[in-house]
Length: 437
Ligand SMILES: *[C@@H]1O[C@H](CO)[C@@H](O)[C@H](O)[C@H]1NC(C)=O
Image 1 (cartoon, rainbow, N blue to C red):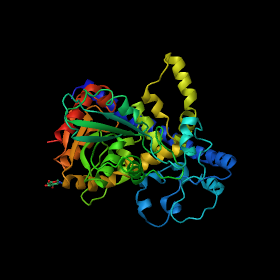
Image 2: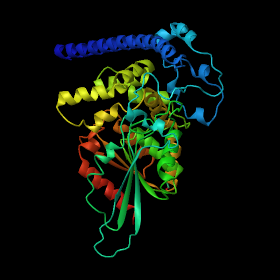
Image 3: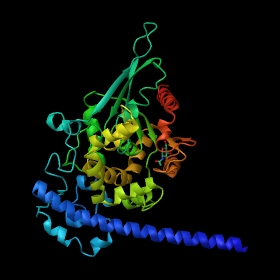
Image 4: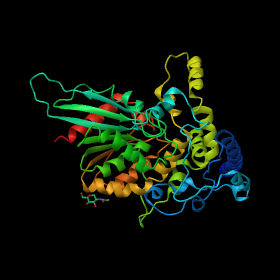
């Protein structure tokens, strides 16, 4: 080995050690900050709401007892993520602030419809007034077929679209809905794009744990039952894929095809288990770089820092939108920006843990049901996806060889749809048409 080479190796090694040390220090500081905000929020909650509500700084055993369906839907990653300062007993003080509650089952929910730390603007709370109608916001659009001759309308193909984390139905209405090639011969199409529970313009209840089951039930209640669908296709992106697979398994007799875009899939190990903390580490490991990865890890590991961000950005989204419009001199902001803040900390935090991390353990069972029912599954994944690694889709393909995997070159988590809207719409048309045969 030449001297230059060994100097290079040494520099790289030192670099790695230095980076590790800095990473360690930054996350140590964040541990402290989270503990600090835990106390602050306890005091503020007590001040504004009269009671400090419990948080997940406690272990599962301290918060719940019993074991029922609801609890099975909760992710292990919710509870007591390791924090040096908490272990040192800093939180005993915060614990004393908490109200004594009767525990049977779990009371992590809130008693207030709208918390002091959530936005109370018209569009954010409109669902509260409409109490009788606790349904998701659904955008419905019909695309009638060409009727040059008197061809009888054969059938209507229904498609349900499910978006991912911190997104909304706009992801589909602004892309696929606008890029259909035109009437599709022989079939009418009816599209349903939902805003998931807790996101976009949908209700954001404060007493809900946003489990996979909650999301699936709400789609059933808001789309499948009221429109009496007995046959439909599904298209989903990112976190929405987990919801879509669960929904498809529940209605496996009705589903004609499932298209998953960048699904966060993790195969269960040989003994059939999968740990949600493994998913959390894979998708949001404690990393400083790139900034997106850092943001993801902070938002998923630190409950109270996350609440601070939501307090700053989600609660004040109208102000930020005004500022951004001024800065960019545009009348309208991109739906991507607007959708980022349309959730509460409660809905975002629980969906992230209970659906993305906690939902992983149900996936193989659900996919097994779909495999047995011979439901056509197609995966579309960008090969440069930094959010959900391509490895996820490769693993699904390996476990279920019947799924069709389309890898898109040079596309990431967003551009896999947004960077190729027309092509993406063509692919979907092709998938739906192939089930007609
Ligand atoms: C999927 O279904 C096929 C039969 O259609 C079966 O041979 C295969 O074992 C199934 N795969 C899994 C992982 O269940």
